[in-house]
Image: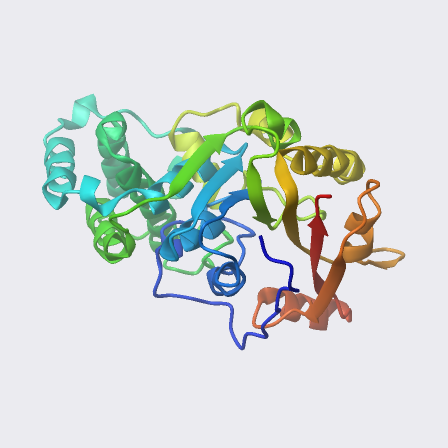
Length: 351
């Protein structure tokens, strides 16, 4: 284990276009560059746990340096994207992707399932037909192809709407809808991201509720917990581009899935108390928990994230380090709202 203070590096930009993390525009993901800067400070022989892994950024970056990492999330789409990022390149063959597309192209028009109403109105009819054709072979896809399929859905939604939407938020429908070749978008997602897959994998991804973490992670088994917990401004991780995927994949229990996530501000403190208790259980004695959090703007001012998490349970942090938001959209919102929010890194040690 390490007993030094972690270093917070100031980044001029948090964007990293040359990585696998653009495979799907998952909301609220931690910067891959920031994550790697932290991970590179850890000993390589540890077992690392990200109990809120989201789209798998921390787990995937851990693989780059050979650290065994475990990711847990309660959002099914997050699990799919995470599994896509950590799949071994030895399991991928381009000819398999082409075979899936050939089979999808061969489906007769009358046999194509109609896309559900809400997403259907956002796609050109030809694009929607291609999506639903390829969906029929979803069960034959490997983990990486499934992640690319979801990413191609998001990218095609933007394309049909003339790329007027941002990479992480959708806007109004742009008529006339543009005819986007979904099969080609799927191919491009594969081609762009497959070079980032690694032959050797050191990752596990689990679909589970972190509030019951010790049900699947043995007590005293984890060296480092490193995570960026869900924003406590109740960010909806089932909306925007993920909503397209939920609807198209017939997961109409989207609201039920949302209720299983920590997204309600009124219960946030109670939920995070449970999480910290579980985190302390699974850490080895001397193990470290590192949370990257941030401030929350309220009508009465700004709640300091470091202070909030430090006082949830009777487990006092070793230290809290703070910095301003750098190179992110948070800076834009702060200028609009005339706030000066900060980001904190909190470090605990299990005695």
